[in-house]
Length: 158
Image 1 (tube, rainbow, N blue to C red):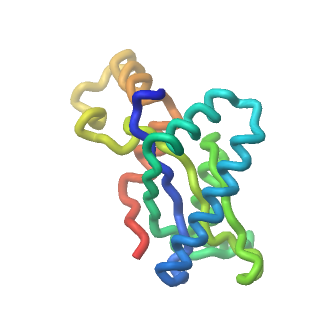
Image 2 (tube, helix red, strand yellow):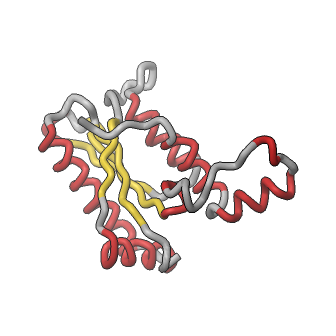
């Protein structure tokens, strides 16, 4: 994992101003770093430290709306729930000045998620189960597969 490029990705609420999007992303990033530092997961600590020491790249994505209402959840709330279901280590930030709504959440990804030249997509014409399973392993497993698929059509925050 140490030789893989890493990026800190995050989704932010679209209604914020440009600078506020960066600030909310930063709040979530600090929370993730603190959570990881307190964790017993040594591999996750190593990944975070490698990112912090060698990469420090932020990718801030449009997270759409925010709404904690269970009948009409905001886009960013739905995204966060999907990440939790998929077991992706992530951290959200709730802004006290905005009614404690979720304004951002962040997660780490390595190059097997975002470098599609080095790690091309699986071509259905190649399909057979052992070959597919080997491809999933080559991109880092099911969590990276989830991230690749989830991030495919997401846009940068404006």
